[in-house]
Image (cartoon, rainbow, N blue to C red):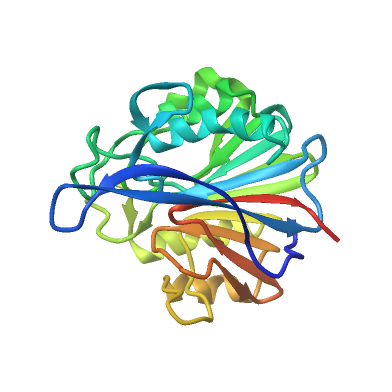
Length: 266
């Protein structure tokens, strides 16, 4: 899944509510874009990559606001009907973590259960939903067990799907006494372990810094990856206005607060 497109092309957007800095709630928009890759997993036509969906929105079918990731899963059907993306049954989903919001989107940094987001994508018909937990997510492999092989939470582990090896490490570097955090040494050791399995795609919540202005990240992680960079490293946690950066022979794709549709392109 090596990136071939020069940049992310806008496709559509979704209005949602998020907690405002300083208190209260604000309405913002989730951008949805398209990016070319050399190939996608066998048996699918596209890969949807997203993360940091820390807000609420109504489903396109109506009703009370739900977690943004749950609403997004419903939008897959709408966009397929509009010809903007393939049917969900032909789409693999990659989640880069931090999928929770307080129910009224009025509290920044809230943490909570996000298994409903994973369930929503599986219920939409996506054949594989895989990814990592962010530092604000409460989710475990046991929580997703009822979804069977359609859902894979990655944390120092990897899975092959359609000839593509996806590996991932959940959480961030930080105080290990706080949820979703590990010491730098333990986090880097987990990254080293999955790199040894030579993944095509590495999924992290906290990723490396990019080489452009405003592309903040963990430089220790970047140093670890640079010598053996996968074709694609997916991350979030901090927002980049420009979502793409080079990393060794591959690319970083930052999906904090955005959706990127990866489709085959020469």
